[in-house]
Amino acid sequence: MNTEAVMTEELKNLVDSELKVFIWQLSKGVKPGIEPIPKADLQNLTREDVVDCMVKHYCDDAGKIAVQALRNMKQNNLAKQLELKLPKVQQPVQVEERNAPVSMRSVQVEERKLQSIQPDWCSPDRITPCSQQFKDRILKEEKNEVYEPTSRSQWKGSALLITNFKFEKIKDRKGAEIDEANMERLLEALGYSVEMHTNLSGEAIKRAVKKFSKRYEHRDADSTFVVIMSHGARIDNKDAILGVNFHKTDNPNDIFFVEEIFSNLNSVNCPALINKPKVILIQACRGDFRRGGEEGGVDVKGGGFQPDAAFESDAMFEADAYIHKEKDFACFMSALPNVKAFRDPYHGSYFINYIVDTFSTSAHKCHIFDLFTKITSRMVNDPEFKDTKQKIVPCIDRTSLEKRFYLFPGL
Image (cartoon, rainbow, N blue to C red; front, side, top):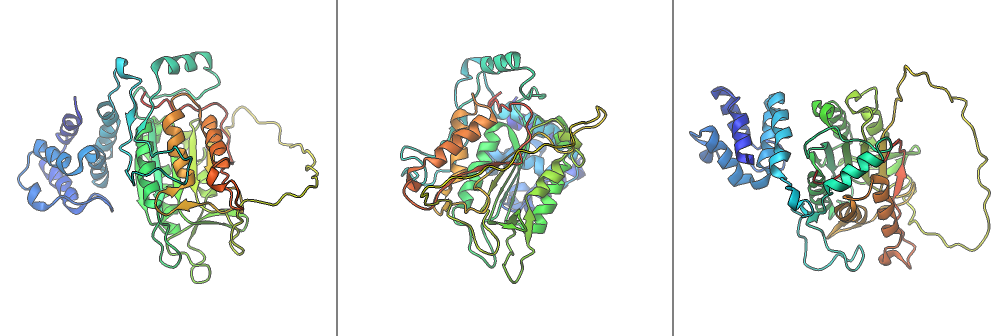
């Protein structure tokens, strides 16, 4: 069964009046950024014709757009059924082909190699899949030390992707649209259905994160990703994402605090993700709100340091009847606190490019911390920043994974 057959099967669960509403959704554009189908192309169509028309206009994204249209209609059960079935037909992996790369449909920017990464780096268009033998061995030999997938399909879960690049009162983030496209394709290739938002205010980001935490699909998911890319700052000693209407004096409250991702996805507010990995990726500056960010480099001229005294916690006991309020998070940020993050206006952010490249080539054999370490090492040794005060160092922050988390791409 192919994508078209799966979509047609689900549309047969709509009565004629509901099908008209579905077609109306397509004529209006399912969500911002998706081009509507001309009304003339949608007249007097059977369910099979509607699916053919969607594939003609949206190609590989037709299934994902159908899911969104069903959600807009409050047909959540049908949307969930279709979303769960799509990965099985969109990314078929046969035994003899398991080592073939999984396509990422990566955006082609320019033919020249990216100067912002290693000289031999090119934007990957495929992700290396995991072999069934490797997955079986890891789950057998490290059974109690790894997060075991609960889903039998290639669908891993849902991902939230928020990108701000167009701002009203401060500089636009040129090149961020490249980050958005490449990150969407990476997440899809890893097996996640991606909910995308662009150019949101701080309050709109807050609503999107809260709504995402309530998604029914989390109950059947193995894990989740939340990726936010925008201007950022340290405000009151907390990491803040700047909304598109932010201005230091005119509108300083258009912000979203990163800590709210944790509070929305914790065990209290998102019980569907208890004991499941929750990966947070933040591409944003972390410079001081008033003084601006540091370049990241210092001139070392000797001297020593005194480490802080060790401390103990009195809260050493936890009754068995309780669960951890916050656990199983992995947060990876593009810069250290009070340091700027850097972006190439033509090719996107250094942090995101390194994530895309490293996940594409190593996620089939490395767990998430190994991937983070590889990315950190590559960024620290980036030749473009070798002899300058500007330095790029990502930061693992507020992380509470109790086991190793493998993504097992392609399986």
